[in-house]
Length: 58
Image (cartoon, rainbow, N blue to C red; front, side):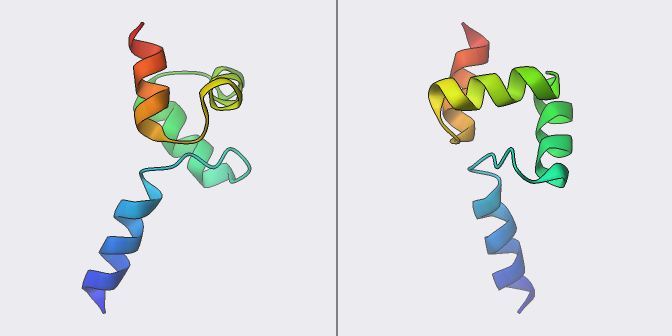
C-alpha cells in the first residue's frame, strides 16, 4: 500500500496543477518562481514539470 502511495506521489510530481494551492506552493518553492510566473509559464508550455524547467533554463 505504501508503495502505491509513493508511486502516486511520484506521478504527481511530473505535472503541475496550478488550480491546486498545495501544488502551487510546492512548485513555486521548488522552482524559485512566483505564483504568477508559474501560472504564466504553465499556460505557455503546458503542465509537464520538465517543460517548465526547460523554459526556466533558457
